Image (cartoon, rainbow, N blue to C red; front, top):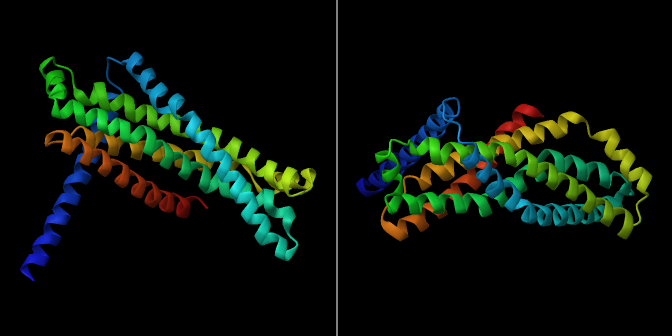
Length: 256
């Protein structure tokens, strides 16, 4: 019994420690955003790393997600002679949920893991300590640009994913399954409003803050050499993915 309670206590202590570390990273980095110097070159480099370099995987994910969604909905709706709703339901699912969530998960796997590994390597090789000796705050130089880039680029990538996903739905539904193209588009216009799109982009921005804060916080506190870097990278991706799904539920309950 004592051993069980001890394990539970250690688990709760570790969870609180990680939560505090992530919150401190976010708060410290957010405060540095409004204080000079504003390192635009570093910020735009992170825009490229997180945003531009993730476009290909986002395009693939969005396209095939839309194609599979249209096919599955057509199979289900055809049993009730409601094939004309494939476009509307697909668009609602993409704009509200699939676009923001899948984009965030894929960018976390590609850019978030790289972010945590890079910062973890800098930590164990004492490069972060070297920044402090040069009177450079590591959060300002390393974390703030990454969190800001994640916050800005996730909505942009989500818009790209939404567009190609709708295109994939249209291709499968209209070109392969024979749905009337006018009906397909009209149903999307009728059922989808601007609020669905905006709320999805708000979700993406929140997911960007989660990804940047978690990956920077855990990466900058890695330890135990190369093994610690690998552990920090794995923990960052798993924790970020879990928090994205949790935040998605909370925001969905508040928005819709």
